[in-house]
Image (cartoon, rainbow over the protein chains, first blue to last red):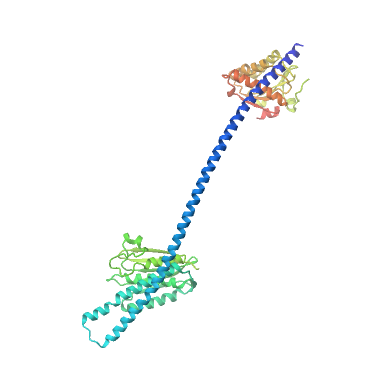
Length: 302
Length: 148
């Protein structure tokens, strides 16, 4: 009986204790719920603020994008106009230059029977040099304009044939001053690329290799044509003057001349690099002052 | 009267002590002592007598794990629980290094809530006791209590 009473009392105490405990837990839960609700509210406010900030940033960004698009459009128009001016003017110079050459030729023919003093004869001869320079510069400017304006026209090109033709041209121009030229050709098939651009590249490299010779030295040029993985590699090496190390990083710059004695336009290598890049290739340059220069071009099949 | 399920494992274990309120088994391979209640309610006198026997066995048998199977209980006497928590467990820890306690409660959720309330009250009342040094876990069976 005593044990039963104790049992009942223990159960009553358990119930009472548990009820108190559950009420405390319920109170804690209520507090947590309130804290959570407050937290939620502040979170919502934070999200609203962030959303406003984000919208503001997006609006600013859109404005910035519009400004940039406008600037890009203006730049595009300016670039197009500049290209057109370059293209048109370089072509328009050709006419007066041809006329000047023609007139000079007529003048020389007319003067054939006339006895001119030495000074007048010298002036007449000297007229040729600036006109030739002007013609070469116009040709280069026309090429720059064409590279910028025109698309690439790929066609199969036999590099060996092209090289022979260019070397013949230089041989006729230079006569006794033509250097010793060695060609190492291991190409087995034509290269598919833009023939006009490729000719300009090769002509420019050969012209540089011929022009910058050392006077008291047997002048020699070595040309390599070889397959390079799926591409074609051409190398033009000379044993000429070379370029001082401090100028080498500028050789592809527009109007760069390594010395006061340079007679070129300063656009040759600039133009070559432009053409190589347009053809999707790579051009590299190595030089040692007093030893010579080597230029390597790698071109893909287009 | 007893609501405790007779687990198969107990049949193979040596029984050291038995009253209408509880039985004490030893699992020597686990260095464990199992106290299984048999009545729905145990008075404090009977409770202390059972645990006095447990103390002797813990001391004599090198017990490292104590399993208290309370599945028969339907009411517990808070002063008994307080004594068990605050005095018996502390003494076993300090005197014999008994740290691992596994408990099996009746399945009824309300009983578990009652135990939680009682335990919370003891924790509040005796904050300096070494409860945090003991490894106390609740399991569903004796077999699991021996394993985890």
